[in-house]
Length: 200
Image 1: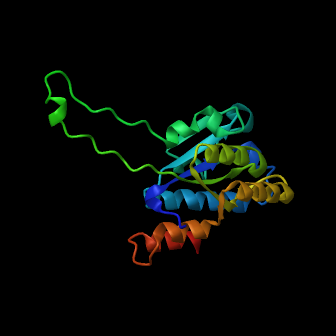
Image 2 (image 1 turned 180 degrees about the horizontal axis):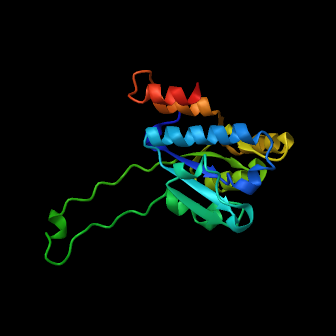
């Protein structure tokens, strides 16, 4: 099973200024998160961000913040508990019209957008907020793809434990480059050179 850009959404979890100072290999983790966000923009993949207790942990780092279409402030460790699924699964729009419009049997149904059920996750800390968000998304029967080189914790042991648990729970583990080339699928894609430049 490969990632499809048209079915994907990207969620960047808690890349916050005060938190990143404690994250192992933070510079590389942030750089990969920014690459993901830029690729998402090039390929029309929605990109959302979250911030854990922003009053205490600060805003999202400037490399990542402008790449997110919306930022979800949260107090729960899982972003799902603070409403992330509502963003990922927009409600169906009711048919438009009023009393003077065509009779219901003559109205054309509104086109329904294909759901984007492949949720690509990256973030910190891998063993807390990312882990709990991913497990909750799996409970909501969404596909979860965790970008391992764009996740961090204070220790590598915590990252490893989180990734082992997520793989056992059914999440797909991928790298930034895997996401890039699966979203592109071909060197003939119109954005191939732009995306390739981000990962070289």
